[in-house]
Length: 518
Ligand SMILES: Cc1cc2nc3c(=O)[nH]c(=O)nc-3n(C[C@H](O)[C@H](O)[C@H](O)COP(=O)(O)OP(=O)(O)OC[C@H]3O[C@@H](n4cnc5c(N)ncnc54)[C@H](O)[C@@H]3O)c2cc1C
Image (cartoon, rainbow, N blue to C red):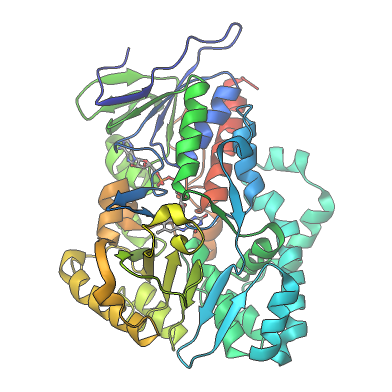
């Protein structure tokens, strides 16, 4: 019996006939937690999700104010079939809940010297643009996409769709020809090394280097395997969800409720209860203990070890070890409601910095907000009139920023940095932006840390800046505690909407195998 909660989204329905009543508690209702809940429920588990915040969705969240609506996290859906499959596991159809809209252009790129390129998933349009900006690299563009396709085909079944540390399972499932290709494709080169081999144009090098930031990493340190990301965007599309991406979290909540999954918001978990090396349930912040056969943490694994597993932490993740693990980057974000339109903007826009290596050195080496930042501006109001009042824009302005460190407090640096970013945007052509603002809010790495218990405010869990972090994240099956599992961006296969959804699927399969409930 659950104690009274501030808000109970669903009380759960009685177990279906013939199904096991093994109880699973999931800590956190981010997308990884919601996906795990749906997959576990489909396998007959009794599932309860406990979320500390008033709303579900975790980093995929929303702020609505003064007629403006802002997605505060993800703005782009890739690999939509993974989202589709998450609905399907509960017998639901994505199209009944969400309208996915392809974007054309996918993104408008601008450089400090005035150069511009609209990247379109219509390859003929992109090629027409390339012929103006970097005609010498037209053939290289196609070779680069083929290279990405090869990488994706060989690595996705190993590193995305399966738990590659579960060798026996992997060996059963995999096409041996793919495994034989891996050594040829996996190199010690970085993303930037590879883009420099393919392209002579500095514009295209910077453009394709940027994809390393899709998992919060630096192109100058992340492994070249991530060159598969541009291919994925071209091959499977770049999608917006009409009404805002938060609709994904809302819809998964409704589907989960319909499946009888108990989802309790405003319910922070204070501790995962462990006895004899086995997870036995959770203790809530109000002191109540809820027993469970299996506990799944969708909270960041590093936060989970530091705060929710006091007895286990010292052995598994000492303070020194936690300090050595490099988080992904975080973000400094301005949410700006404007009283006028900015017709130069597309839905997604990038204003590149003039010195990309220096920018990533600021973020990952000096741990400083970049002096010369690349600025991402998402204006969903350009394509979706529901997101801002008529004649207005809802601008989500984001700069990649370092994770929280001890050297300074974001509350102190944010006001000046905000002015710096605004001045850059005005100089880049958004003249009159400052005077047009009628609503403003801001998100900092510190706010991400407290809002979602994200370790040091990282938005994609660990960085993929070294091979160990990229491929050896805290595993889905906790090593130190039986019946404890992780889902979400901090574990395998990593951050981003499709990957955290896959973590939920992989974890459910592991739990089913471990409990004999296949
Ligand atoms: C600014 C930004 C931009 C992004 N852009 C994109 C994009 O364009 N495309 C894309 O695919 N991805 C993007 N991402 C990444 C994507 O949004 C995340 O990887 C994904 O949503 C994270 O899901 P998760 O399962 O890891 O859970 P999280 O979102 O981390 O959720 C974990 C949940 O656990 C809860 N929790 C933590 N501790 C406790 C506790 N003690 N008790 C109870 N509950 C607890 C938290 O409140 C939270 O709700 C972006 C993220 C951000 C922040």
